[in-house]
Image (cartoon, rainbow, N blue to C red; front, top):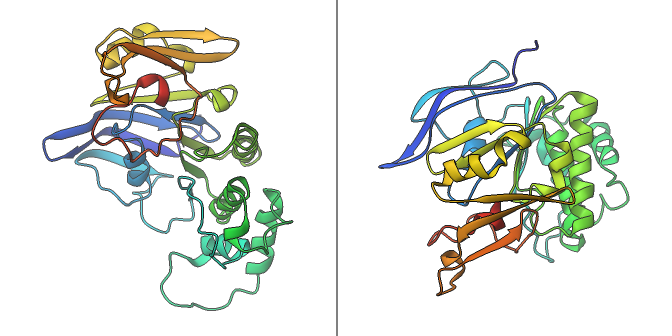
Length: 292
C-alpha cells in the first residue's frame, strides 16, 4: 500500500482546560476523499490549521507527506472558506491565483518567466479563463471560488485541504465546485480533506468520514459513521439518522441553539445551508441536523 499523505498519531489539541479532540489516529491515503464533519466548535478548521503548520498539537504526532507540517509547503493546497470580495476590489482574478505561487514569500522576489504559463494552465483547468482578467469584486461567488481552487492547485499539491468551500454557494455551484475538487483527486491522486456541514452535495464522492464531537471522534465510511447508533454515542443523546432518496437526514438534537423556547426537537436535511458562518454561534451549539 502507498504511504499515507497525512498521518496523525495520538493527536490531541487543548485550549486551556478544553480538549477539542484527543488521541486522534488517522491515515489518509493518496487519492482519498475524507469528509470532516461535526458541530461548530469541534475543531474541524483547527485540524486543517495543524496540517498547514499554523497550529501545534498539544501532544501526539502529525506528518504531511512524510514531514512535519510547515508554512508555505507546496505539497499542500488550501481552499479557504468562501467569503465574497468587496465590490470595489480591483485585483484581477488571475492576480489572486498568482498569489498561490509566491504569496507566502516576503518581498517581490525574482520574476519567474514560467509563471504566466503556470497560472494560465490552472485557470483553464478550473474553467475560469473567461473571467480571469475581470476585477474580483465583479465576479460571482462561484467564479471567485473557482479562482481560489486554481490558486490552491498551483503547486501541484499532493494534499488538498478544503475549509467549507461550499458555503454561500447555490446548489448548482455547490455541485460544480465539488466536481472540480473531485476531478483533481481522481486525475492527480490528490488526497482531499473536506470540512463541511453539508455532506449531501459530496456524499457520492466521499470515501470516509471523520466525525468530531466534543473531544470524541469517529472514522469510517459514511455507512459506518452516519448511523443512529454511532452519532448517539458521539453526542451522548438520542440521534436518529434517516436516509431518504439518497440524502442523509439527522433528527434529534435540541433546538435551544436556534432560540426556540420550547426546547423541542427539530430536523433539517444534512445538506441544507442555513447561511451560517462556521465561526458564528459561539454562544450555543447548533442543531446537529443543520451542521452535519
